[in-house]
Image (cartoon, rainbow, N blue to C red; front, side, top):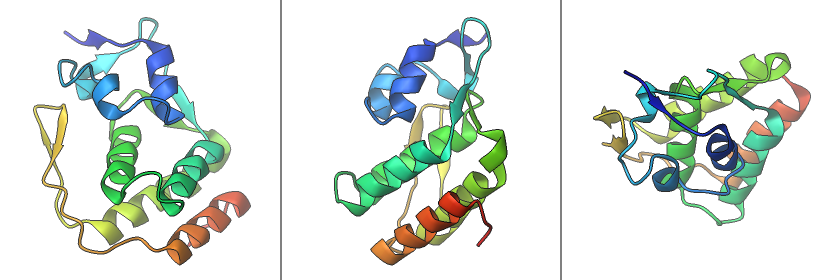
Length: 139
């Protein structure tokens, strides 16, 4: 049986107003097996992705936190990309995941374990990703 999650909490996480631990109720909620009351998904658009990329660039969050956000948005069935920018957002997520890490496991559907950062994402990388999103182009 799927656990229920509040749509507003998902929006707060998407907007980077609450951390992953608060979203998944300190690990008590299995996000990868959750749904909203009416089955809605939270839309993720380029402004949300750009906001988080800028937070990383401005050193407000770590690369680990950036990756956790991306993995959660990308892998949970609770979010969907804006249709006009779906391919651009998906490509940026995949590039960041592949560039920055070489291992990733989901432990009990709650905790990200095994993220091993093998390359630091640079400011020039972030600028390139933001330009691609703004112009809706593939890299």
